[in-house]
Length: 196
Image (cartoon, rainbow, N blue to C red; front, side):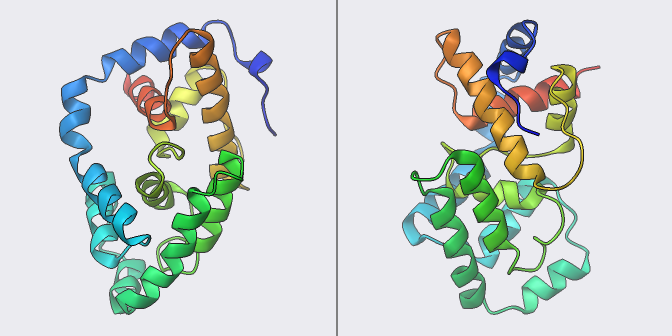
């Protein structure tokens, strides 16, 4: 189910704005160093290699002592780059609405081990691939959405529906004179979801 701007409660903006301010600039500067470094390499190459995936696994704090990590390690980097190049292109295709670009990027990433279930790691790669369009998905951001009254239910097309909500919240920010990127919204949701 998609939501409209009208479905966003009036209380959402003060909570979201305060949460964005609460996530300190220094924390973002230091924590996002890895994300920015990987994003620069993706911009230069147009694809994501195993070393960059490894860096984003560390950045996202995802467990890598799993079968998918072993299968990814056994896959030739050139094959990984071919699959991820299509995901990078999809995430940056400005002819597509953001939610559709995210959906298509996730679909392309399913060719790579580690991206067949849940959007957490895929969202990190897609955000590094298109930092101004995509947003990082995690359970704290989901808690933040819940606190705003915009809870996501069900797993079908979860990342696409999440991105739709991100875009709605960017529109709310614009109404208040703020030019937020998708990453600004996900940081605010993450911070809001971690309080209490």
